[in-house]
Image (tube, rainbow, N blue to C red; front, side):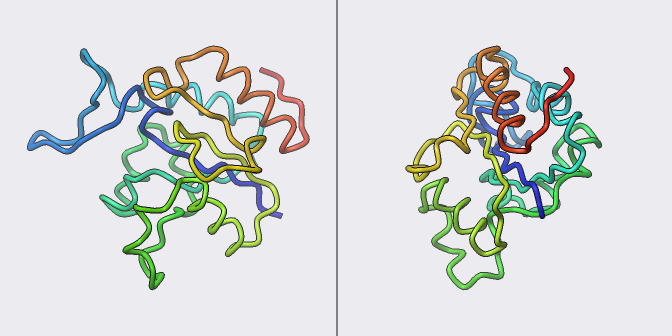
Length: 167
């Protein structure tokens, strides 16, 4: 049985949203913010759970494609866990994907792939009604830099995937 973490980037792995400039992707957060600054935090959280796959639920997949979005992750330990994305271009309704609520995107993927054991890390709550216990909700301005969110993440991982981490 697959165990999946649906992962958003903006507002989770780094503070703020991102936008594309002639110099590349930059954060909307004030000051000099390193993209993926909290990737090491996620890697540490997942370390006790080697069976967890990552399915990208980030808009980066729609904008850049799965491979480029995956390759943007700075840590090999995260990149190697990526097995797919909620955005699947081959679906006939893929043009409607960006307008769908994030929770709806994730729930559609979970249903299509018969997932039972999953968790999502996102700064969006839209469309998760009835599934908030499967969501680690981050604040866009702090992402995984918020200790309370990291503690909630640890707890949800242990609850959802049935193991007690030794962090």
